[in-house]
Image (tube, rainbow, N blue to C red; front, side, top):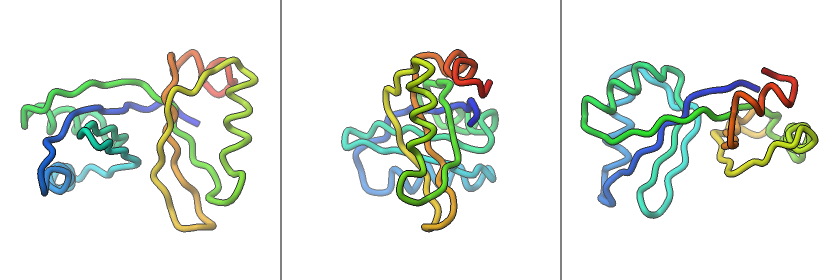
Length: 128
């Protein structure tokens, strides 16, 4: 489990908006670790290079909000996430939202956990 940077922004509700953003990131050699796109165009993503991502998005005039989140690689099988969530619950950490970037079954999935204070949560769970 690690503390990573999540980027939140709003995409236009139009064909190609997500494709264009992904092309920008690819052109900057930025790998998307996990993402979530809601129907209203709210995009959340975790990447492998937050500094470069911040610059690329701001250069294209995206209004970006950064937030610390917990990321964890869990086995991609039934019950793989349960021990991590139990650890956080036992440490008194409330998970506000979650999404993931998956791998093929039998590999690992990266799960993003939005919590009130990621640094405190990591420390409370004994992983910080």
